[in-house]
Structure formats: C-alpha cells, structure tokens
Amino acid sequence: MAKRPIDLDETALTPAQQVVFDAIASGPRGIVEGPLRVWLQSPELAEKAQALGAFCRYGTRLPPKLSELAILVTGAFWRSGFEWAVHAPIAVREGLSSTVVEAIRIGERPEFSDPAEAAVYDFADELHREHRVTDATYARITGLFGEEGAVELTGILGYYTLISMTINAFAVPLPDGAADPF
Image 1 (cartoon, rainbow, N blue to C red):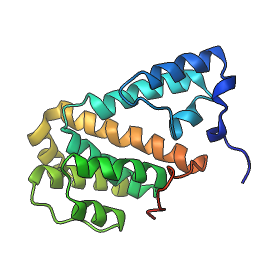
Image 2 (tube, helix red, strand yellow):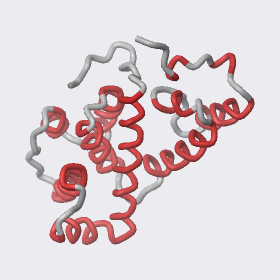
Image 3 (cartoon, rainbow, N blue to C red):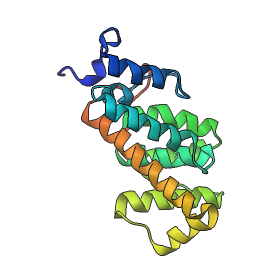
Image 4 (cartoon, helix red, strand yellow):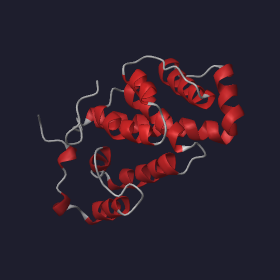
C-alpha cells in the first residue's frame, strides 16, 4: 500500500502541526491516533475538527452511552473498522449491552429495552440511510432531549461521518491487536 498520511512522522512536525498535536495529546483524548493523525496534514482543519470532536464526544447533553450508540451506528454505516474497534468497547463500558452492539455491527436493528436508546438508534439510522428523519422520530428525540439535543445528536452523527470517511479514505489501520469487525 502506498504511504498514507497516517504514517506521519511525529519527530518532523511543522510548528503548526506541533501546536495541534500538543492540544490533542493534552486534551481529554490523551492520544493522537487514527484520523486525527491524518488531519495533521492540514493543521487548520485538524485544529477545528478536533475541537468539534471534543465537544461531540464529551460536551453534548446526551449521556455517554447514547453518544457512543450514535457513534457505533455511524461507524457501522461507513464500515469503519478503526472507529468500531475504538468505540465498541467504550460503548459497552458506558452501559450499552453487548447484544445491541453486536446487532449494530452485523447490520440488524437491535431490540431495545431503553426507549432513549431506541430513539437515538432510529434517528441515527434514518438520517444515515434515508438522509432525513420522520416526524415521529424527530418528535421522540426532541421529546427526550429538546431541540438542542436534536442538533447535538445530528452534530455527533456528522462529526463521526467525517471521522469514518477519513478512516476509509486514508486506509487508517485497525488499532494493534484488533480484528476487522466488518
């Protein structure tokens, strides 16, 4: 395979790349891996995208379990192995059942006991597959999280679409020891 931006040499970063690298490494992620390494080829994009990502992952009104559910639906839709390998264990740790995670991985609609999980799944799935959401699905999300929550959920889906597209376009390899989930 041709050399890709994922092969970035951390010892030869430009000053602009180093600033963004340090901001990511010292933030809540604590590591610069996967698509974030690719984005460093464009430090300005990396700076803005990683700030949006930090909000989408850590700052929205959705509980972490539901954010991770939205991330998994997106990663599975894009068949983004790196994203799946990173976030599936986090989703389980945050309380999403392994049965739900596995159903999403194999492209089936999970059985949900939690209405909020079902609402997030349906919103994410409809938006990815149909490019819109029904009035009923929209009403369920806004009933649970308000308009602000609907906007934030859409932001999570959009950001992790960018992540997944970056992973796929630049052939970001799976983390060490991870098996290809798709």
